[in-house]
Length: 225
Image (cartoon, rainbow, N blue to C red; front, side, top):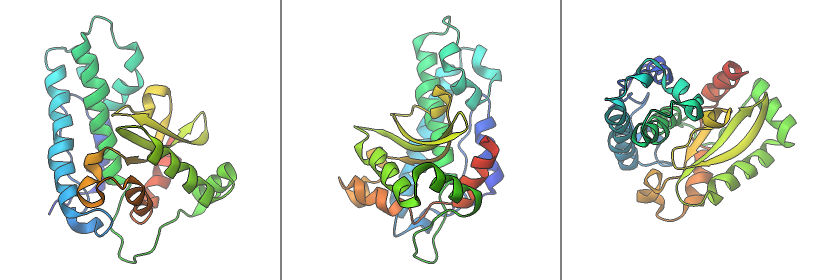
């Protein structure tokens, strides 16, 4: 069982080199039947860990990025010194990006004891309805972004210049790199769902609504505003 306080995960985005793998705030089996225990285990302990190791290895010989947090590195990716070799820049884009993407992913999910689909409440709910017309229309756009993302990547709900938007990104690219702040994201790399869903990405995406931690998404929304 991997249990920890959520403030450790929140600190991930403030980590500076060397980066460290965070625990998740629930057990691997706690998202069943929507996401299975074995997928969670492999996804966190192998895939996420590989991004942490890749980031540390790729940046170990280049001190310039060492005093910047993971988010600062991603926000400033296009301004990283041209003196840095491609290997170091790729370590930021692919591995630091992968580390922070996954840290958010674990935190914006939570166990579901009721078996009911979850929806936001309060100000975030109102803003979603105001922006998209209804929560169901937001769902449609988010699911479309997730299911039509070609190959590997993510679908996001972001804040862009104060407005909510649905978007997607390839591989481990992070919305910060384009000036957007992510508050909700779903991993649509095959390793996130293939053991349980095989090639049925749409079923995995549909079940995501049962495990979203909308309290955490709302916290990120308020912080990002």
